[in-house]
Length: 242
Image (cartoon, rainbow, N blue to C red; front, top):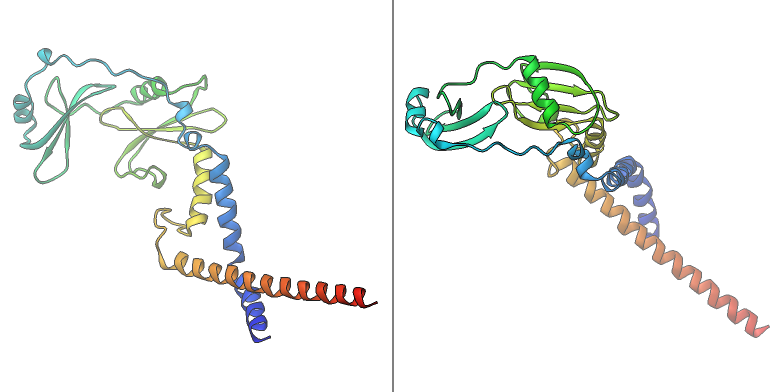
């Protein structure tokens, strides 16, 4: 009886405390299961763009580019970008420097027309561009820092492409589907601000409390089933004796 009473009280009161979060866990899990991650990432809105070939004979040497850029790199990466081939030069100390592989100097500031053109080239669909803006600080939803170009499309998901202001490359894609998914993700891991930490004390304590609900529920079920079986056997004995 003591075990039954204790289990009943724990099951009831702990359930009241964590019941809403359990609902968020189940609801968040349902959202993550139903919506394909490719749709969340707007991969269906990404056009297949083949990079242009880089002809090294037409470009100055890496040494000449590094000298002109005033960088002594410990790492150098040559890549194709919408604005032409670019070197990313990483010095021993400090941030990487991106320069044109053709000139050895940083690219000129990108215009709204360029940003819109590059975004449209990278977009799959028939929707028109509904807005273009240079953001001085990257929004939290991008997971990045520094300025970014944002180009919005008038499709049903309200897709946004975020572009590097230096190279014109699409660095990330966001949409209302992603924002809906992200809301439930934050509720799911109980990190309502950053949506990144799922090892914080609050979720650990809540999980332990939820585990106590499961354990006490099993105890209550065991006791209830035992009582029902006992009543059933007693009923059969009475019927047999009668």
